[in-house]
Length: 119
Image 1 (spheres, rainbow, N blue to C red):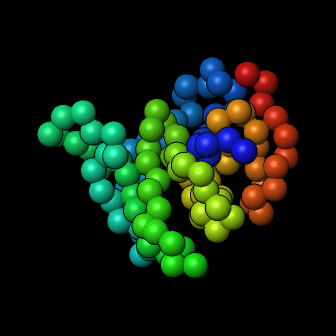
Image 2 (spheres, rainbow, N blue to C red):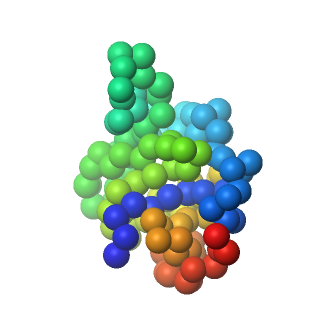
Image 3 (cartoon, one colour):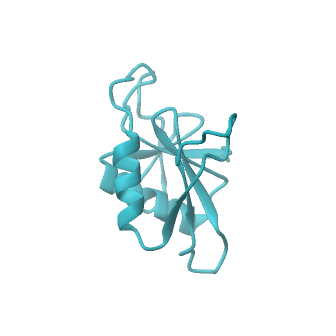
């Protein structure tokens, strides 16, 4: 199973005009009572953008789970089924889909659909 899963609006690896914007991400997080914006988990300076969000709503009480806006995609590491469900919820609100590091696509139930994008 791939390590990272992403919400992306891209349909090919070369589709750079379809990024999730910082404004879209922060607007989504601010409307979700189970998410809180935090500084980047990959900060390289003291001036750190608020690009990460911690999820405190996992149904099994796990967490917080970190999601982060990286290179125009929302990324989470090693999601379980509930976290993948949350990622799918994000995809629906942001107009994207869930894709893994290997280019595999997932439906809203977290089922693998295959490698659908031509990259």
